[in-house]
Image (cartoon, rainbow, N blue to C red):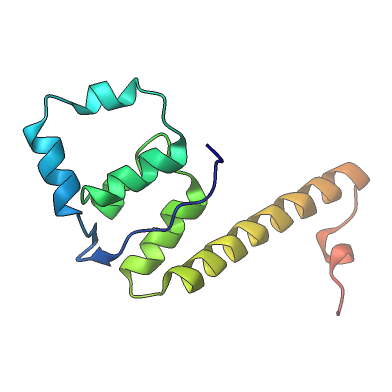
Length: 121
């Protein structure tokens, strides 16, 4: 199966909107979260499953398989932003953090003042 990015599910009241069919199947089956944890699924599939069963957004961020970009986008969606805008803003923030890291590394490596890295573009 090709590993592709799944959509972030809709959010209401800081919870992903559960898929009642998935929830019903999960509740009537002998399958447990521990069973699912040892099965061979991708992180993308696990993230979408947590969303489909109505996981809280804050709890979602604590799951080991949830990446920062998806969690940060979900938080923005819970504040009313569209998925596309939330993902763009989350990626922009990650890019800003990476730029700051590179800037700090350049200052240390080349022993220059941070202001010397500023430019008017």
